[in-house]
Image (cartoon, rainbow, N blue to C red; front, side):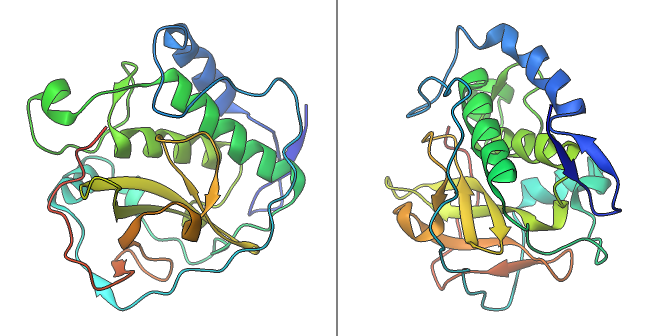
Length: 225
């Protein structure tokens, strides 16, 4: 099993505790999926992507109310650690890990809206029961990747406007080869410019505050599946 060097210089197994999480959610993998998820590749290495651009930021932004509630319940998930790397030093092993986690979680979690799941318009939480909407799915991916040794500071929750004009949440992996998007609507991990989304705001890298990524009106909720 491969290993990844964490921020403190120690080595962790390639999935570590995250593999246990995958095993737990694999029980529902045969019954659920998401748009564009498709089958995971069986052992095929994922070649490093071409270099992409880093997205520009445009000043401090306010988070969604549901994010504030999530942080009150799980403050460690929203904490800023300036000692962590702000970008991931991308190599083929780490890229393969990112692609595999994106595919596995997309396949394992059944996408449902917060209204159908919890009876509320917007709630950010982990999909521990195998059900979740866009932000819940991305939060699980981030937890798995940080458990595998990647820096939390470089994995940023991001709000976009999707192809239907609705609010949508994705996970932005900030790397030394550019910013890439993990998304439950597609299997591929793409450079941010190739998703077709309009980018609104994301967690900042220099503080716990969110930052604007454009001048679009921000959605109040991110409740699409």
